[in-house]
Length: 372
Image (cartoon, one colour):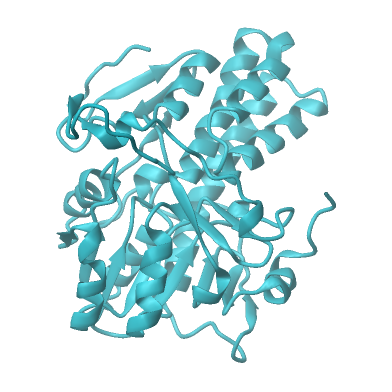
């Protein structure tokens, strides 16, 4: 891969209700850039995919040019591109690259992309959608249109979720977010960070806090970079300071994204989310999950059925290539955990919101669980 461097009223119905909001997946009326939305990390260049290398942020804005499906697989696997929606979008463009190179090997390309990372359901959803177009004998142009539609729809969904989530937040609120759920993790604007962008823009959110998110420091490196880049004042905290922050009264909401939401509302997200939900419930802080409907996996009954990705212990034992722990030490490095639906106050999607999610309320908005 070449790496050229280039310099709002409440939507709830009755308590515990699922509320459906009309949604039209289009970006035709949505400006590409606003005062709090200037970042695009996944860029189709007509014959190749350009990705902002998130491993090098915040100090280097370096782009990777992916010209083959192998390049895209490597970028997903090695976290050059990350965030469930962005992974799915990148994978869709990977299918286009594979079709342009050799359509006879599309099955192999789809398998390689599926294996890149196992937890984020958006990856599988996007590949299933691309495979469906290919299954109808579609050519490269049709696959290109589908990949573009996936990307455009994600941006439109994020803007809509931002409005829905911000409508739930009271004036002068403080919010805490975890990991990175902004433009870097999506087609643009973001999921949880999109709600924060919308809330700041509406004058509702007065204080923003971001957890550092060990061991890859996505909150410190990426979320703080996005917030500062788009003129949103924020404070970084150590992950271990979250409970103390909640006790102080400076935070009324924890707002996070998701990598997979099961049929009963159990939510897999970046490691550390579960303990934030426990602390939030103890301190009377509300807990919001924001994710597109492509993250809802109605074929997975509950969180126990979600595969949790384990990554190399080296990510815990070193930083920047330098050891931080005595030689011979061992580490356990799960990338995600599962927050039970009972600890989630609301799930926000572009289709609407689900208060106090459980299997019945999820089914009311997203339909029956797919057959296994």
